[in-house]
Length: 204
Image (cartoon, rainbow, N blue to C red; front, side, top):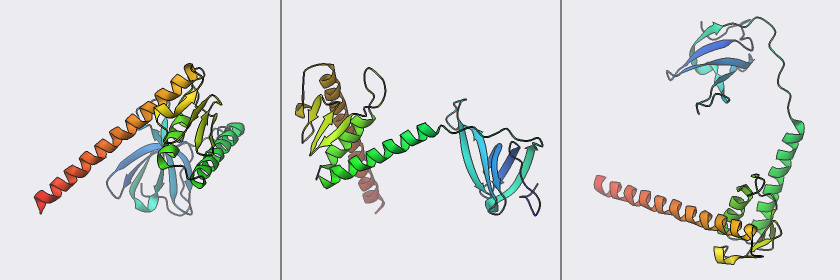
């Protein structure tokens, strides 16, 4: 069938197949449909291949040449899943803290390398809890981790100071891996730039 005309709509829970103007076939379950804007939301199998995940795709029917209803749902759709408000609030609070921390680092004149290392540590899992290291903060230009380790500029392994133990050892390994990854990325970028320059010379 063609995209819905006056009085036509897609029921939530129905399964439809859409052919875009680019020739791409999209198939999935209708999650929502806004008639005035002709926007259709489909839940499709995850592109990652994981069975417990789904891709959610927004489709503008103005750019769809054909829509087929595979299975039309007529009964009342199930209620929407409840939102974990406390989890969302916690995530919003965490994002706000990250942005404020980043703003402080910039205003304090912390180098880009220091800011990048701070973010890496912040996202790294703790050894005992396997959760991100949240107790990571700035003290002027120094990075304070779990109140046990101080990393001062230029933020190399030898700049990690604290009581010898598992915490200091863990942070040193994070710092070492961070700069190793940064250097590896720079090496790849240099190789790509050289290849691009070489290709450009050959074509000229």
